[in-house]
Length: 155
Image (cartoon, rainbow, N blue to C red; front, side):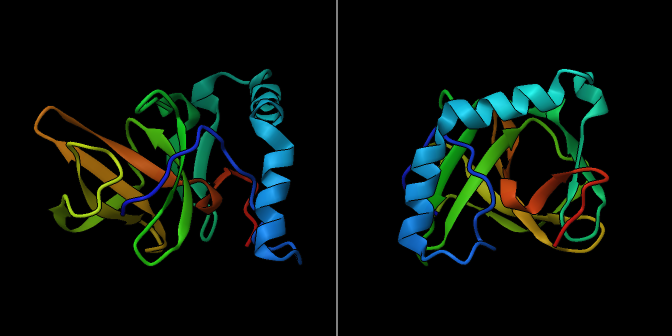
């Protein structure tokens, strides 16, 4: 699970009929400020606890925006795993709608000092990210493309 990090939350471009290199160029063009502005605008009329985040596949509640935290100075990070699959994750203090599978591993960890475990949707089993843990605490790294605001499910 080693790779590079970015302070950018990226929109889902996987369904666009655009070659992969062009997708990353588009992400760079969108820029962090525009995406952060979109997030702020969507949250202006609701309290954080009223903004549940659900599994994109089945619509089950996973966590709330109020659980967003920063790790290594940012909420969002982009990493590439050893299989060269790129993930953009958001860090959350809890994710009650997830279940963890397998033993904890420090191999290829994206966060120094933390072991990781696969985290799945507790309802449908969709891969939603990882739980990062160490003796002094834990947090969840959710794959942002696999979450939606509850009530806005799309596949």
